Length: 165
Image (tube, rainbow, N blue to C red; front, top):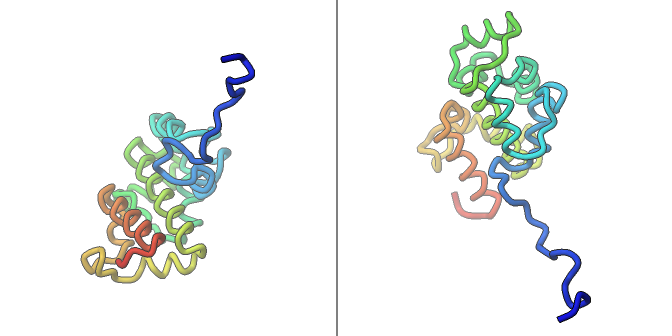
């Protein structure tokens, strides 16, 4: 075997490894971009770094505007009382680690919904509609829990692939 027989680069299918949250670019955009987050997100582990210090409140404001959630809906989705949410907003406080992780997961659900529905308004309607595949719950009512968010993303994947749900 000569050097000519050895390929100069590895040819692999164009797939993405290790990005379970979905499209990092879209999630970052939903959270307000690198400027709001305070760091350019290049991979999933970058989210781990930003959650350690807590996301800036600007991220929460951008997320709320994008999702068009009331304070009550956003607080419930982040498993945070409405009074804590209002205090964080008023005092311009960073989110804590758990709240930051919940915000990122919420953005990942939103990104998946946009991938599937390709229309934010249609996805918003779906979130507010009772769904038998979710135990006759509205998807919106399950966003407060990591398990609920996972179930919603699983259902969105089934819808995306045409699996009866």
